[in-house]
Structure formats: C-alpha cells, structure tokens
Image 1 (cartoon, one colour):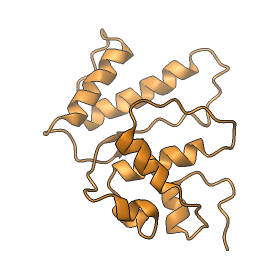
Image 2 (cartoon, helix red, strand yellow; image 1 turned 60 degrees about the vertical axis):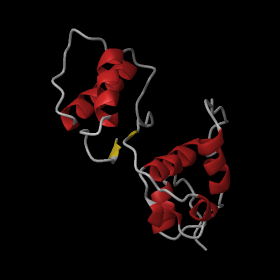
Image 3 (cartoon, helix red, strand yellow; image 1 turned 120 degrees about the vertical axis):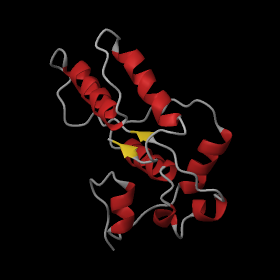
Length: 146
C-alpha cells in the first residue's frame, strides 16, 4: 500500500495509486445541498486535498472518480472553468507579496481570455471581468486556470 504522505493533489493520489479515504459522498452533498461555506481547519487537516478534489470534480474529470461514492451519485458531470489560487510557497510576511501573487493570477487569466488589462481598474473589477468572460458561452473551454 502506498500512503500519500505530503501529497495534496487528488488527481496525483488517484493516478499514482495511493490509498484514498473516500469522502466524495460528503463533497457531493456539499456541492448539491449547500450554499456558502467557510472551511476552517488546523494545518495539515486536508484542506488542500479537498480543494483539489473539488477542482477535479468541477472540471468534470469523471475518470478520476471511478470506484468512489460520487461516481454513483453524479449523473451529469458538467464542466466549469476553475480559477484556482494556491497561496503555498510565498512569504506573505513580506509587504506586497499577496498583491503580487493576486496580480500575477489575474494577469495570466486576462491573457487566457484575451482581455486587455485596464490598469485604471482595481484588481477586484479586473477579476470580475475575468469571471464574466469565463462564465460566458463564448469563454474559453472549461479547464483549470492555475
């Protein structure tokens, strides 16, 4: 048995044959029955793996979910654009780091969607433009934007 020590990527755990404790029934309930959630857990408690699982679910990667509970629950397997921001690996003690990380993601998404950056708008408004383009029928194909 291979245990996924330190691995926080759902697709890697599944594709590389690591042991996975199936919590996808709860994920299905969270998505279908819930509204707004605040996930507050201690360090090393599985938040990143949960987000990775949700990401793959919303990308419609049905093949990764063969043999787990959600495979029998989900009928549609729709695909949605996923905007994933990983805050690992940066030193947020340094002033301006958070702003640089967010700016980098927004700029990359603007390129994906062929949006000319309007520097007169704040990051929030630029992000709203990206989300609108991503959710429009003529937006980019559903995929992950890391």
